[in-house]
Image (cartoon, rainbow, N blue to C red; front, top):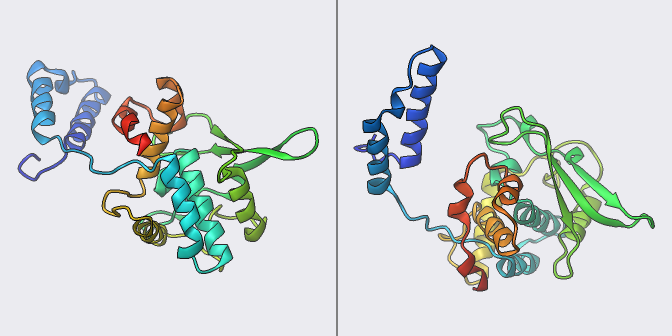
Length: 251
């Protein structure tokens, strides 16, 4: 796998699978042998690669939302794109959780009913609750919810409500095009790349996962604990640490 330039994380996944099969059959786990452990450590040092993706910080997110007025040619398209970007940042979402590709079934897309409006005594919507029924590392865990609160600048709650007013209340994917079809990953990434370029930034450094990197960094800068950040991003390990880049938040 090293000769084929496999990433260290990919190698670890394959090795873990071998260990799991052994344990499942009642045999000792050979991947815990000293030689194998040290071999993997060395592989990690030799094969480690710098993540060139930069975080989409809150200031950059605001620029993206503002630029959507120019990049998107219809009111519906603008509201849709702004809502997707806002949710991706404030809920620390993977692009694959809210866009469709030919390799996945449409039924697994995030649905409208997973978003709940929470009101106060005056029946004013004060926040939105998003519930994950399933995710990448769920492993049959209970549904997990994230609450989005109102903000003064580019309020994510209002942005999503504006989109919902145009989308309508019909069941189906939360994010869909004007014709009712789900938004593909290619369409969203292409629109994001155009917007990033319009903002004067490098599209090769800001990708769909940059929302997740920025969200983790934003949460850490706000003082959230490791366990809170892990829960926010639905991580089952400490992999989120490589996403936290506090110094870049000021740029």
